[in-house]
Length: 359
Image (cartoon, rainbow, N blue to C red; front, side, top):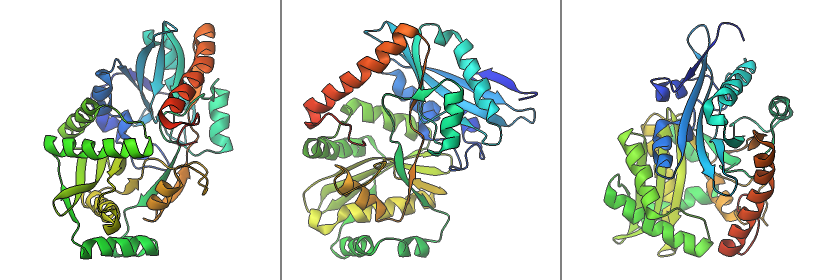
């Protein structure tokens, strides 16, 4: 790639990642590539390195925020680029320049492995590009590989008509029965949401963070004016919550929670519809449901969640998934052997099954 410049930790990073045209699928980068996400992760021992490859015309050709964290048993670092990097699909050579810059930086000297999770299609071209750079399919996807994407450029009436029949009926039912939806962007709203989330976690054996983590997420993204927290209530009690974060003009439904109380009134369906409308009101062009089975079938443990999300008309999309590049022979071996074992043990003790919930 001729006449390009590589920048480390450039100023105005969030503006760069929100530059349109880096991906054929998204107007902008996901929130995991923003400084707000790095701020959250810093509290848990992650250090951030931001690398940008800039074309001669000043536009970003490749971008990626890498988070580094020490692996205690290996004594080396894990480098992780969550839902990144991004690169111009018309200039795939920019990805090599980005990778060379990361490998040449001091952050890679004591690293065992670099994991990337680009949000590019799971197709032969994507896999060939990554394997040609030395990557191999990762031992574990960290972020969801599958999702549902809803086009918010459509008119509200068209979006509503695109809902599946049972979802459309339930939205109206919840309205008739008096379910209320309120924007609760406040510390008290976070506490109420986490109360619902803990109930959901116990009921469905989800893996959730501690309460302090969600406080940090809210603080970081509210400060960036990139967060909306909505709660559904019935007769004064909370029955469902939807947490949206924004990156540019994409809205991401990153967290959801429900209660069994008053579930017959379908508050979660009305909540999701209002969240979609809130995202549209904020100018979002895409609504990302943030997580769906790669191959949804009736036997999948998240079949019910998939049906719920699919009811709002999103398009099922699958990304290429995590890919690992070994930066140390011993460390890379330990990563590929030790991580799957640790994940399986964790899943077994929490969920009663060794497979991850998205598998």
